[in-house]
Amino acid sequence: MNIHLSKLIALSVEWQFSVSNFIDFDWGELKLKSEQGDRNAAALLNKEHARYTGTDHLSFNSHGLRIGVKFKF
Amino acid sequence: MKKQKFFISSLMLSMKTKHIVLLLCFFLIGGFTDVVAKEEKKEKKPVAEFPFKRFYAEVSLGYGFSMASGELGSGINYDYPDIEGFGGWGWLKPINFGSYLSDGGCSFSEGWKIGVNFGYRFNKYLSIDFGGSYMACLNTGNWRDLSMNRWDSVNENLGHSVSQEMHLRAESGHISVQLAASPGFNRVDPYVKAGMLFSIAHIWAHQSYAVYADPFWGASVFSQQAYGSRWA
Image (cartoon, each protein chain N blue to C red):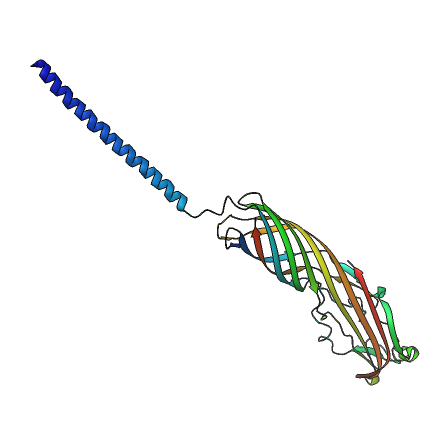
């Protein structure tokens, strides 16, 4: 809603909703920056020795409060 | 005598007409002054909001909350073999299940938002609004910790654990075109807005993976760190 404080200035208060498409984020695209320890020992301990390289579906959907000042001219 | 009478009657008539004229003049002047006074009163009234300023510029600040968040690591396979049907080398058992794993999911839409809008009012009821905004989803609470212990077929701990963490953050820019409709009230004017939003986002990701000889973590035998970023 707009609250007209004067002929030139108004206060606006909104509750916004925005819906967007999901994006796929592929963890396999990340670059390995560091590795420490014994890979073979880890492989022996954990047969499924690997970091997760799958894909996640992530959202930009949002809702929230917005307060603004309008200058009319 | 007749002449005298005529003179007197015509004098009376002229006096009457004079009075009527005077009365008319009085009312006319009175009416006129009344109109002038009314007009002055009208001028003294506060100027209505409309006809109005057609253009506006707006600066805004807001806070957004996530909707429809997604879980990280959604593709991780939790198909652990059942203890009865699996002997020999052991099986993976997730611990902390239900606490770390259900961390509320991930969304890039929770955070502070600043914006600038420009608008034009077609009339009292309808306006078009062009906006640009920036949103920062800087919290690194988007993570998932997969902590697992390996147990054998008789439910004895084989003595190691695994952890995996994923962190994401994003910054996004938005350009919007919206139509706003309002009832056109002068002071408090509610409105509804609807339109299209074009967004671009930059996402940063960090992932860490570690294997520990100890069943409850401790010093890691092996660890990996991976980073990356992408536009969306």
